[in-house]
Structures are given as C-alpha cells and as structure tokens.
View 1 (cartoon, rainbow, N blue to C red):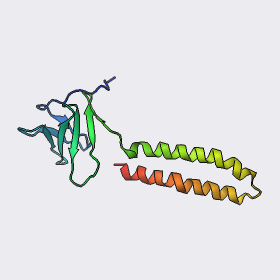
View 2 (view 1 turned 90 degrees about the horizontal axis):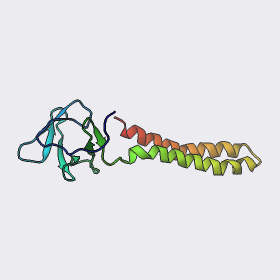
View 3 (view 1 turned 135 degrees about the vertical axis):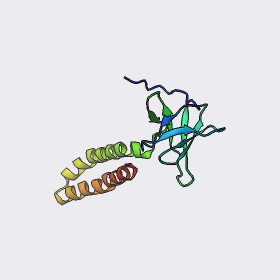
View 4 (view 1 turned 90 degrees about the vertical axis):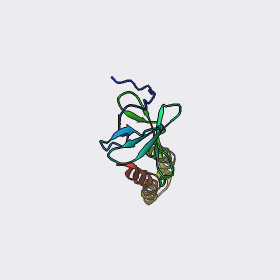
Length: 135
C-alpha cells in the first residue's frame, strides 16, 4: 500500500505529468518550475515545496497537486468532485419532504410533476457538471 502523506518535491528530479497524458515533468533551469514533455504546460512549486501548481492564463481556477512518492493527488478538490454527491443528497432530502405531501394530495399527477421537477432541478445540473469535468 502506498503512503498518502505528501512529500516535498525535489527540484532536480523528473516526475510523471499530473495531467495524466503520459508526459514527464522536467525541471526548468534556474527556476522553481517544471515543464511537461507532452502537454507543454508549466508547473510551479508552491507551499514550501509541497504543492505543484499549474500555470494557466485562461483557466480561472488553478489546479494543484501533492506528490505522495508514487503519484499526484489533488491538493484542492474542485466543485466537480463534490457537486454530484451534494446534488443527489439535496434530491433525496426534497423527495423525503415532498413525497408525503404529494401522496396526501388527491391527484397522482402532482406526484409525477413533483418527481420530474426534482429530477430536472437537481440531477440534470449535477450530470452536466460531471460531464464537463470528465476527461
């Protein structure tokens, strides 16, 4: 079993690219940065040598990783990692609250509208975010 503890990044060593494109990160001379041989991205070392951060001019949120000695782990999981479980939890809570109310009403059409509304308002955006963040 590999250790999950973060290790300090050695500025003289090569690493696999965290973008998972099978590239290699090689040190850039006289800097605290690495360049990828495959995706041509530049990565800088931050947080006293424990975090690798991707430099990007167009992406508003910086991606960062920590090295555990064998692989890169996301340093700050983004919205794409947590949105789907949150949306499904909200959907479940809405069903628990609204389902008894809908069952007490006299028509079955309100139950169908309720379930369709819950699915459209919570699950559809969660799936859209999941697909957008998928590589």
